[in-house]
Structures are given as structure tokens and as C-alpha cells.
Image (tube, rainbow, N blue to C red):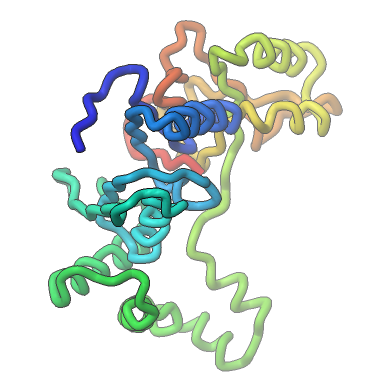
Length: 271
């Protein structure tokens, strides 16, 4: 199947987009798929969980086997095609090691288990539970946290469950919220921004702003992103360390296709 990409049929979806922006993209994708029109969607993992889309073909970069299976769930999802859908797993041509290609070392390790199984066994039937039993057995042997963390091993042996929960943290949850100027909702964003600057923010403001904000893991001290992230002021006084306004007078840092584009130095992950 050959589909030429142009502005009408090419879409991007990621958590770089605020929730309202993502919803608009998904509405556009669904409309084209419903009509049987050409549609190309370039997406991060956010399309793999809780998104009901049905494509005839899916291309998924090499990753953890469960992520590949989630992506495959968006291929001929409703069984309307007379033939089987096709899922192709590929390896991006990208230099710089795993830090450039994968978000975390744990993700890299899981992708490497998938790679080793593909190299050893060829095509994998992701509908076969035995494949996933073998995958998780190999992954657990590789990443068993107790074997790499004496304190965690001691807590498990002592059945100290609060301490286990404290020590067994795979992802840093220190995220911040950034109100972004998406053009289709820019008037509402401006109202929220003016209210924040005039009166400060509170619970009601946060509820109205959450669908127009992008969540990112807090950049490290000295990252150039801090030059354009302005902490919001609370109505009761003081500055928030969780809510920020994007200083973007020229529209350089929120793109109508790519979403939030922060100044680059080290990588900043979208939460």
C-alpha cells in the first residue's frame, strides 16, 4: 500500500501535545479512517494505551515486547479487513547509544530481550502466551531489582512492604505542568494566563488549565528550558513549583504539529 504524505493525511501524536490538542488530532485521524481516506499517523507510545484506532498497517520501532503487542492492537483492530493486518517491527537508524534511542535503561533492557528473541526465534506470535512467559522470564532474570539492590533485597526478606514500595521505584515522578499556547485554544489560554498573572492560581484555575498543559519531568538545574518556564503565582501567595507559564512571545516553543519544543541541551522527557 502506497500513501503519499501531505498536510491533510499526515498527523503527529505525542504527549508533547496538550490533552485538547491530542483530542483534536485523534478526531481528525478517526474521521479519515472512518471514510477510508489515506491517513499516516506518526506517534509515540501514547497511542498504545487506551486509544481506539484501527489501521491496516502498523510500523513499530523495536522496543519491549509488550509495547510491540500494544501497537499491534491498533492494526485491523475491528477485524473489518478481508486480510490480516500487517505489523512491521523496525530498528531506527540512529547513533548515540541507548540514551538517544530509549527513554530509560529499563526500557532499553526490555527492548534488548525482544531483540534477542527475534534473533533466536525469528517471527514471534504475540498471540501465544508462551512467548510472553519466555519474554518475562528472561527480562526478570536480567533486571531482577533485588539482585541489584541490597536494601531492597533485605526489605523483601523482612516483608517490610512500605520500605519495598519506597525502594522499588522505576520512574521518577517529579513532573511539572506547563500551560501552552495551542493556537486553536489560544483565547482560552490567554484568559488563563492573564488570570494567573493578575490574581494567581488556585484549584479552579488548575482544573481549567489541565487540558491545555503539557506535563514534563522537571529539567535539571541549568537546563535552558528554565529560561522560558515562568513559575505561576498562588493566590494565597508564593510561587508554584509544579505549574509554569510558557514564555513564548514568538511562538517558537509550541508548534501546531509537534507541540511543546523546549530549548535543547540535555534530553527532557515528556511525562
